[in-house]
Length: 105
Ligand SMILES: [Zn+2]
Image (cartoon, rainbow, N blue to C red; front, top):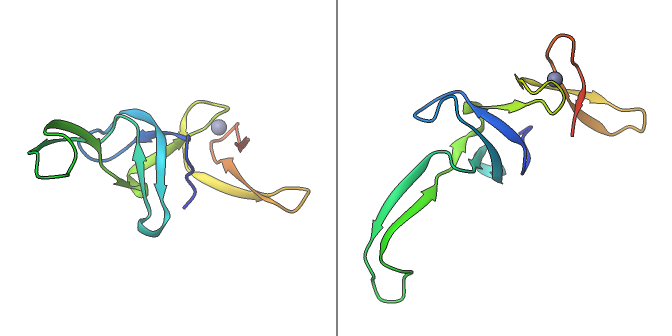
């Protein structure tokens, strides 16, 4: 999993293809992410005892990380993520776009 919370991503598959958003949650064990305003489902819920409020609730559903592309913070284009070992030994994510190749924070 190369994605992290607050990354900006482009949706490349599914109903919300072409949308962009910020990752609000990463589900590492499922290889899924939740993206703000994307893959929203509307739940009509009834008040059943103690469970939440009744009515219409909008909820962002997790989507598979393969269906999103990270948007490079330098060139502002969706990119595949490479990795590079920095001088201090830590691994960094890098943009694989030609002419960019910058480290993505
Ligand atoms: Zn880039």
